[in-house]
Length: 80
Image (tube, one colour):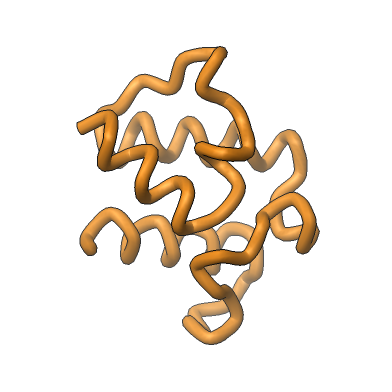
C-alpha cells in the first residue's frame, strides 16, 4: 500500500496539481486521460527508480507497466 500511496501523491502533485485524492482513480489511464505525456512518462520512471530503487529497462516501458496507478503499483511490486 505504501507504493500506491507514494505513487498517487506524486501523480496528483506533479501532473494534476492537487492533493485531492478523488481527482485520480487507480484504473485511470495516464495517457488516455491526458494526465501524463511522453515526457511525463520519463519523469515517472525517474521517480520510480529513485523512490523505490527499481531499474526500469527499455523493454519494460510499456503501457501495461506504466499507464495507471494500478499498473505501476503491480509493476514496482514485481521488481522489488
